Image 1 (cartoon, rainbow, N blue to C red):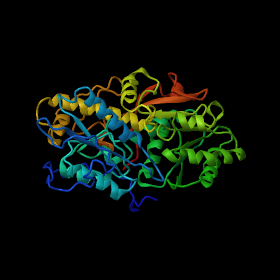
Image 2: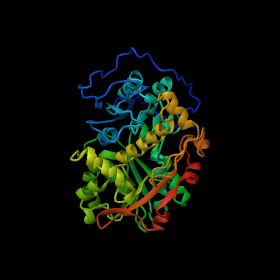
Image 3: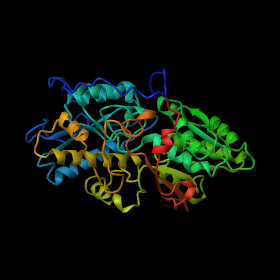
Image 4: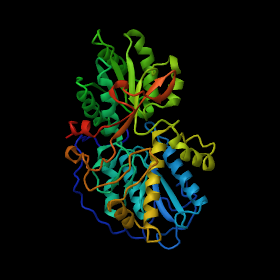
Length: 441
């Protein structure tokens, strides 16, 4: 396991956190002071006003035995290089700091403290399972958290959080909606972790909206090296109804491919089942490696927050990757983390453009976000804006402002947009109403 506390709860954190907007002492020593110590800093002087660079941070787990998102800090660095190569922001350079949260609560808090010590104006496009560890230090320093991955409910409750997608809540609710009309029994295989505890009621909310019974909940260690026990249990549950083909939903992120190794062996002893999951647990590379059109994902439904990677609306992101990170195999344009980082930096640029020649600080970035800013992402998401409380405040998600999901399907081994009406969800669907009925409190 990753050293997380075991007093787990699925209850969202309180929305009424005390906020101190004053900056921390500039004399504090950063955890990674040297630019050559592997901290991932684009060279440039520190500072927050005048002609000094505008400093932000992106963090994600890397080189761990569980979930890894190296493409997110790599995309952030590529974006910074591209912005600087084209004149910067109002003539000022964008300086990108990165941090590895190691899938550990202590390291996540250290990343947040580093951000405060470095006087960054925002943390942008990041991933961490430990919102309860990193949000408090950010809030104490008045630093906004723009475009987290949405892996825990904390990101949808914190006053300093500005999510760009619906996170796991929207993905699981959307998947449940799609499966309700097509599956017999549904078995969910998910991590035995704080983040994993939040998945079953979200999937069940979508199933319930379609008149389906709740899914069977199978827990697994997120850093396991094999999943034979979970595979057998999931298949036994999914095939219990002999009249209707069941569905198995592995939601193990990077460990999904490990699960599939065990699953392929186990399924030979059971009737056929359908597969379904969320983007982040499956991508085109995994589909290819498991047999493509002849593999277990053929015909599977997969929910995402954004259009497929082949959509022309991603062309600018791909151009930036080609110009600034060509050959960097950490950055996959089809990776949901990379895509989220791109959108988060699109929001940051809109904020900085709005501030213009004024002073850029964490306070001014936060005020701009809070003052009704509307951000267009070129159709990759709805226009984004963050009111004090969104429509889902009543179920514990006051900061969730974009509950849209897209339904994709594996056809002939390729992940493509689902046809209108497939699985009861036509292309893009808003999960706001479904989540309003989720039993997450």
